[in-house]
Every structure is written in structure tokens, then in C-alpha cells.
Length: 64
Image 1 (cartoon, rainbow, N blue to C red):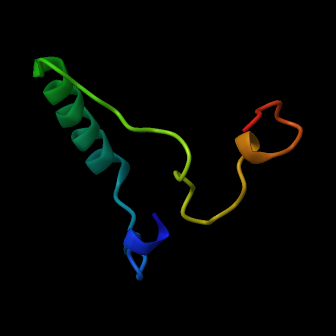
Image 2: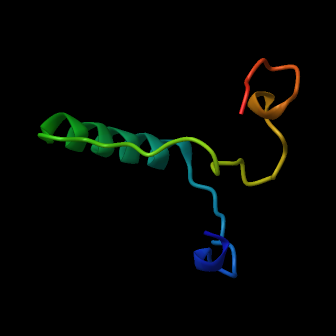
């Protein structure tokens, strides 16, 4: 997998809350209209600041 990862990280940017709300509403509407919907989640999703979140601490009870 590491050999297919991009060598340069994607640029991060911030949007206004109103813009995020509009996009979330549009996405919700598309999901409601769809016949099928798949979401990929899990390992590899990390906050942009690279901090360890509570799911990654040894005290969280999560076993990998």
C-alpha cells in the first residue's frame, strides 16, 4: 500500500460553517435519493494535525 500513496500530502484548507452546512445538506440529499450507499471508514483516517486521538491510546480498550 505504501507504494501507491501520494508522495505529497493534499493541501488543507478551511471553509466557513455555512459552506460546510450547504455541502452536508447536499450530500444528505444525494444519500436519501440513492438506491445503494457504501462508506469506507476505519484505519488510516487521522486528523490533519497528526495528533493521536482517544481511539489510539492504550487505555481506550480498543484492541487491534
